[in-house]
Amino acid sequence: GQNIDQPTEMTATEGAIVQINCTYQTSGFNGLFWYQQHAGEAPTFLSYNVLDGLEEKGRFSSFLSRSKGYSYLLLKELQMKDSASYLCAAVYGQNFVFGPGTRLSVLP
Amino acid sequence: DVKVTQSSRYLVKRTGEKVFLECVQDMDHENMFWYRQDPGLGLRLIYFSYDVKMKEKGDIPEGYSVSREKKERFSLILESASTNQTSMYLCASSLSGKSGANVLTFGAGSRLTVL
Image (cartoon, rainbow over all chains, first blue to last red; front, side, top):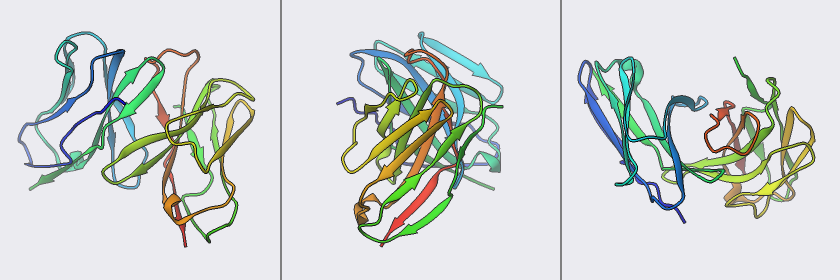
């Protein structure tokens, strides 16, 4: 199967920068999504990368290296409301394969 | 905004009961999906559907069935609930076609406890 790996927990301080890494298997890979999920809520779309490079969207950026099977989500100027789980999902053909999610705690 | 509505946020059922989880989306999406979410395992695909009356098995279909009689509604059925089906169930939908690039829009989830 296609294993998606990401750290299960991270902690950072308000105002700081945090990088959440995700690795995936490259065979059959079509693209990579990042979702944010607050406790008890639906996952919401953050970003989609299909080509190599960095996609910036406000305080959030996402990077992809197709050859290395690697992506990261960069969160700048962290706010308390950024405390959530961040889900990495690789697309293979028609199917989404999700990682275990990274629970980010932002401390004051 | 696309809305995906799951009828029950919390359910408690007994082992052996039949359970229906309903999901409705209001933006005419062709594709609908059922996932379960467990700590440390991420989202795992149970069943999906690309069209009315069509269904395909995902990664963990055992113990589940689905129904899609109308485009906007995708139901997940547990014929005989078991304790290992205690989980958070998430429904999602996406736009037409079989492109993997379509964004999934999720419902808020249904937390099922089987006693």
